[in-house]
Amino acid sequence: MGRLYQEYGIRYFFGTDDNFFSQKERALEIVETLARAEIGGARLRRRVRWGTEVTVHDTLQFKDYMRDVSNAGIRALWLGVEDMTATLIKKGQSVDKTREAFDLLHKHHIAPMPMMMHHDTQPLYTRKGDYGLLNQVRLLRKARAISLQVLMITPATGSKLYEECFTSGMVYETVGGRQVEPRMFDGNHVVASRHEKPWRKQLNVLAAYMYFYNPLRFLYALVRPKSKLYLADAVMQLTGMWGVGLTVRRTLGWLLRLRFGRITRRSQAPGAVIPMRAPGGGPASHALPGTPQGGYVSVGIKAKAYVSP
Image (cartoon, rainbow, N blue to C red; front, side):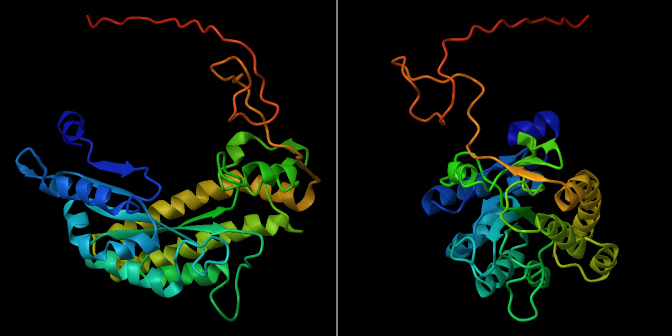
């Protein structure tokens, strides 16, 4: 971080650890080291800002060390809230624990950035309880979340149920005559669902974003921001509205295909395009069924050298 800051002026970093707090001793060693570190004669936290991913449960387990976390330069934490009622994914989260974790982070000037997962059985809104998607988005905003990520649950490569999602017929092959491309497994497109009206799931994701990011919330954030960090709430509202506009533009056509087009489904997981084989010459044990074994591939690389005049 010090070298990147001094040589290139980079101040903002993101750690792609799925759950930074999962191993307490390791995480403590990192934050305590960074809390003591200096860049150009000043504490690291005054030069750079960084964030990473955690869970609600492990954040509360780390509450006695949150001052060290703040001193290490962390200014935002992306929390895998997923579903606050723990109906779909259970990570020790609940409505009360989520509020407690958010209050803890705000106390130490760390912005909570929740990440949600929408699924077939979750309605857009419920009159009673907190099961509806908008109900949970509202609770997160009241708990002073300054950003929100909502993704439709999608088969993830390497996950335990990845292959089963394909063999069970859950994953789409074509929608309205358009082939489902690998890039569409991003959580923004509904490409795997058993819902009888999957277009509603696509619409729900857009509705959740528009409910959280909108001009009224931006104006309110200027007067009574949810974050103690200067203008962070208002800036995130502007960024979020811009992002919602891009999401609508890129998924509206897909929503219409889901609504009016014919859907065909896959029956098996895609194999790798690149041949895979074990060191002994047989099939690779970790390759998906249908992956070509093949031989070695020789790749030629051309390089050019550029000399400054």
